Amino acid sequence: MKQELYLVFSGLLAVAAGGCVHPRQNEVRSPVEERAVAVPAVTSSRSATAITGTNVVETDSPLTNGVTLEQLAAIALQRNPELRIFEAEVAAARGDAITAKTWQNPEATAGYRVGRLSGGGAPTSVEWLHGQLGLEQTILFPGKRTLQRAVAEKNVEGRQLALAGFRSQLAIQVRRAYYALLAAQEVLPLREQRLALAKTFVEAARKKVDAGIAPDFEATKAEVEVVNAQAALRLAQAQVVTARAALNALLGRNPSEPLGVTGTLSPDVRLWDERQLLEQTLARNPSLKIQAAEIERTGLNLRLVRKSRHPDFTVGPGYESEPGLQLFSFGVSLPIPLWDQKKGPIATATAEQQRAVGELEKLRQEILRDVTSAAQNLAAVKEALANYTPDFIARLRASLDAASQSYSEGRTPLLLFLETQRTYFETQASYFESLQKLYESQAELESAIGVPLEELSKP
Image 1: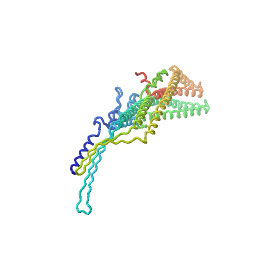
Image 2 (image 1 turned 120 degrees about the vertical axis):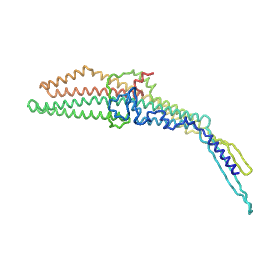
Image 3 (image 1 turned 90 degrees about the vertical axis):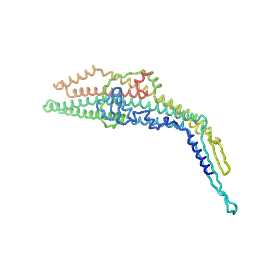
Image 4 (image 1 turned 180 degrees about the vertical axis):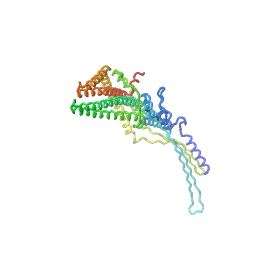
C-alpha cells in the first residue's frame, strides 16, 4: 500500500513539473543579455572604438589630437553613464513583459497519515493508513492575461521612447558643449594678446615718465590696464577648463582629463519658419510621444483593473487512498466577489489616466512655449552677429594699429590708446562670445524640439 502511494505521488509531481509553462530558451534572456543584444556598443569594454564614417577613435586614447564633433558624439553615445540607466530600464521593462506572458506555477500538495486503532482493553491493534495527493493550477479570468501583456508591452515602448529621446538630447548637449569649448579657446589667445600688449606699454610708459615727458599717472594707468588684462585672462582660462570639464562629463570621462577638439565657429545657422517648427515639434518631440504612450498604458491598466473584478479560478485533480478504498477527484475553486468590487483600484486607475491626459496637454503647452522662445532668441543672436562684418573688424584693427603708432610717436595720449586697445580686444571677444550664444540658442531650440535641427529636413 505504501509503495502504491509513493508511485501515485511521484506521478502527480511529474505532471506538475511538466505542466509548467516555460518560454523556450531562445525566447528568454536576462536583462543583461537583452542589453548585450540590443546595445552591444555600450556593453563593450572601455577600450572599444567609436566609429564615425571613416574616422576611428580609441575611447581610451587621450583625445588630444583634434577630435571632431562627430567623433565626440559617437563616444558619448557609447560611454555616457546616464545612457546605461535608460538601457537598464528598457531591459527591466522587457523582463516585466516576459513575466506577464508566463503562467503561474502549479501547486502540489501531499499528505500521509498513519493511525492505530485499539479495541477496548484488547491486546491487538489495527494500523490505519490515509494518503492524500493534489495538484492545483490557477487560471486567470479570460482576457486578463492579454491585458497584462498589453500593459507590459506598452511600458517597454515607453522606455524605448525615453531611451531614444535621451540619445537625441545627449547629441544636442555634446554639440552645445563642443561649441562652448571652441569659443572659449578662441577667446583665450585674445586675452593673452591683450595682456602682452598691456605689459609692453607699461614699459613704454615708465620710460616716458623717467624721461620727464609724461606724468606718473600715465605709468599707473598702464599698470591698471595690466591688472585688468590679467583678470580677464584668468577668467578666460577658467572658462576653457569649465567647458572642457562639461564636455568630458558628457563623454563619461574624468572632468580633468585633457581634451583637444578641432572645428570652426560659423554664424551660418539656418533659421526655420516658426510655424514649421511648431508642427515638427508636435510630430517629433520624444517627450510628447512618451506621454502619449503613458496615456495608452494607463488606459490599458484601467481596463485590467476593471477586469480584476472577475475572479480567477483554481482547478486541479486530487487523489486519496485508504485501505481498500481509492478516490480520484477534480475540483474547481474561486473567490466570490461579494464585498470587494475593486472600487478603490478602479478609482485610482481612472485618476491616473486623467492625470496622464492632463500632463500631456500641460507638456504640449510648455514645449511649444519653449520652442517659440528659443526660436526668437536664436533669431536675435544671429541678427546681432550680422553686425560683425569682415570690413568692421578690419577697420577696428586698423584703428588699433594707427593708435599704437601714434602713441609711440607721442601724438596720442595714453588714455585714448588704452581705450582703443580695450575696444578692439573686447569687440573680438564679444564676437566669439556671441557665436557661443548662437550655438547655445540653437541647442536650446533643439532641446525644446527634442531632435537636432538637421533631422527636421528628413522625412
